[in-house]
Amino acid sequence: MFKNSRTRSRRNRRHRRQDVQTTSYGSLEDRRLLAGNVTVANTDNLYIRGDSLDNQIEIIGNDDGSISVIGKNGTTVNGQATPLTIAGGEIDTQINGVRASYDFGLRANVGQGDDSLLIEGVEFKGSSIVYGGPGDDSVGAYQTNFRDRLLLQTFTGNDSVSLDTADVGKDLYILTLDGSDTIGIDTAQLEGDVFVVGGNGRDAIAVKDSTVLNELLVLSQNGNDYVSLENVLVGERTGVFGGDGNDDISLDYSNVAFVRNTIVGGQSNFDRFAINVPDVQRDGIELRTFELGGLEDDVARRKMVFDDLIVSGARLGTVTELAILTPDLSTLTGAVVATDLAGALNDTPNLTVFAPLNSAFDKLPDGTLESLTGEQLSNILLFHVLGESVFASELITRTEVETLLGPSFTVELNDDGVLLNDNVTLAATDIRAKNGVVHLVNEVLLPAS
Image 1 (cartoon, helix red, strand yellow):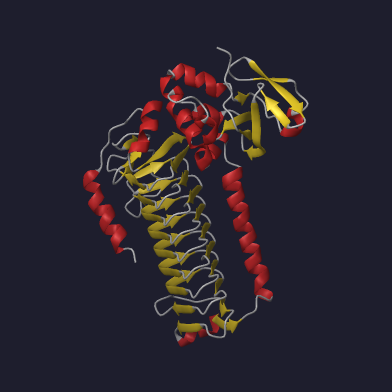
Image 2 (cartoon, rainbow, N blue to C red; image 1 turned 180 degrees about the horizontal axis):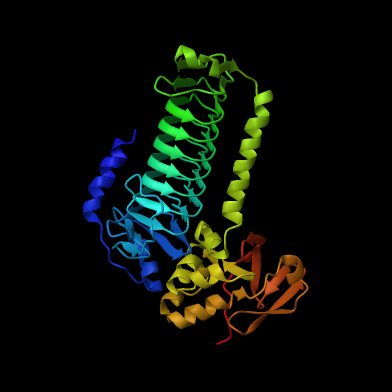
C-alpha cells in the first residue's frame, strides 16, 4: 500500500533545496498564473494552507536538521517556485529515520483542489492537525514522529491517508467523509488511543505491523467496506465495527504476542469475517452482529470526542491559525504573511480581528493591492485589529473602536444591522480564537489617508 509513497519520497530527496526565500505581496498575487500556491508561516506552529487549485506539497526533514517545504509539479510556496527552508530544533526521539525537528505542531489545510501532502523525516513536538479539502486528496507521513496528538480529516472526494514508519506520542484520530477512501497505518508506534472512521463510500482501512498502547477503535460507515488488522498489538481494548454496507473484515493476529478484549461486529447479515488467531488467544475475541445497542454508547462517545477535537482545532486556534485554515480568507492570509504580521497576531492576547473575505478584496479597484508599499499594506491590516476582545453583543453598544493602527473607526447600528466605518457590513460574528475573537466583514476597512 505504501510502496509508491516511499519510492516517490526517496526519489524527491535529490531535488531538495535549502534556499530561504522572502516574499512580496505581489508575488503572492502572481501565483494565479501557476498550478497552485501554498501559504506557509512558521510562527510557533507551522501553518500551511493551499489555494483552490491542485497543489502538491512536501515537508521534508533535511540531513542538516533543517526543514524544507517544497511545491512540486508547478505548485509554488509563498508565491515562489523554490523551496522554503526553516531552521529545525533538537530532535527528542531519534527513531524512524527522523532528520529534523520542529518545536511546535503542524496546522495544514491542503486546499480545495486535488491535492497531496507528503511529510517525511520530521518530528513535530506539538499537537498537529491536517485537513484535506473537497477534491481527491492524498495525505501521507513517512518516517515521521508526532510527539503530541494528531488529527487527520478529509472531506469529499476519493481520499488517501497513510502513516508509514511513524510514531504518534498521544491520541491519533483519522476521519474521512464522503467518497471512496483509503486509510493505511503501517509500522507505527501509537502511544495513545487510536480512532479511525471511514467515509460514506467504498472504503479500505488497513492497520498493519503496528503497536497501539491504549485502545483501538475502527468504524466503517456506509458502503461496502474492507477493514483489515494484521499483526497489530493493542495494549487495551480493540473494536472493529462494520457499517451499513456489506463489509469484509479481516483480523490476522498470528504473529501477535497476545490478544485482549477484542470485539468485531457488523450491522449487515452479509458481512464477511476472516479471523486468524492462535487457539490459545481465541478467548480474547468476541464476534457478533450488532444493531448499535450497547456498543453504540461507546461509538457515540468516541465520535463526540472526535467532533470536539475538530471544533477545538478549527475554532479555538489563534487568530492567525483561523485565517490560514479558512479558504475564504486566503487573500487576507497572503497579506498577513507578506507583511510579517503573522507572529504578532499569533502571540498577542485578547485581540479582535475584522477579517475581510476574499470577496471584500475583490471589490477593490484592480491593481490596488499590488500598488501598496509594505508599510501601507501593514497599516491597512492593523486598522482591522483591536487590542481587546469585543464580541458582537458589546460591539453594538459602541459608537467607535480604537484600532492597533491608532485611529478609530465608527460603529453604527441601524435597521439593516451593524455598519463599520460608514460602509462595511458584517458577514459573520463571534468566531472564537485562543487569543481573541474574529468577525468576518464584506468590505475592506480603509483608514483615512
